[in-house]
Length: 351
Image (cartoon, rainbow, N blue to C red; front, top):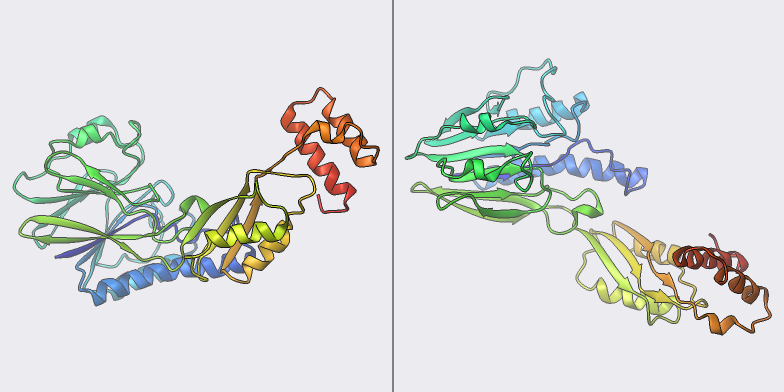
């Protein structure tokens, strides 16, 4: 038997925090298509079931159009069973939906429920305030193959206390909530795993994204992470300390971009320190990178390098300005920031 474990698709996300409206609309469409592509993969690879461990949608007030699209996909995939727990973003998203749910979609409520499918016990519960007493009510068959579905953080005692799940005959704990692939042991018998999100939405979700493929033979579960995202997000730090001009900065950036695909999304963060006469051309660097990649952003986190002795006898307006700022009683970080902005203004650069 083959089962896909996915979570945290966050369909219907607005995505405008990182992207302009046009790219956000395109990326929003891609996230929806990722679920369709997942079902296509499942069909082509003879997958029997798909586990969705919460946050299929980004919010409970998901558009009817999006919900109908997802339900149509599920209903059409008649040879695949879908098992879903709600997450903290999409709790009870279908509760007021007038359409009858597809027969192959099984949604767990706020008490433990078990579905037995081809001899496999799939148990789950939805909710973000599961009490200790609730875990005490989790009863599984010792001799069965037991998959348990939950949404929450096993590193937080207030979310999912892993200690409460030890010794309960769990073979595989299918988790959602953490947007990066992670896996570990519950006890000698079972493992837990987060598949991460299917597609990265922001630069806090960088790296390869995908799902977990479970293969069950002779009551043994094997798991494998399958990379699947259409685009990969990259958060890259570029040190400009030794750069003398914007061309040097561009060369340093290019060294970091060697293996990145044009379809990917890139955030470049300039770090280190620089001399006063360095013109970084961050806006042009960003525009150039946006010609190479689906989306690129350049963020300047570098700091101005000032030697007060260099301006001790400088009779220019720049020298007078720098001396006045340096001898003020402001914090050092604030002095540097004011000098940066002031020099930009004197050089008629955009501040």
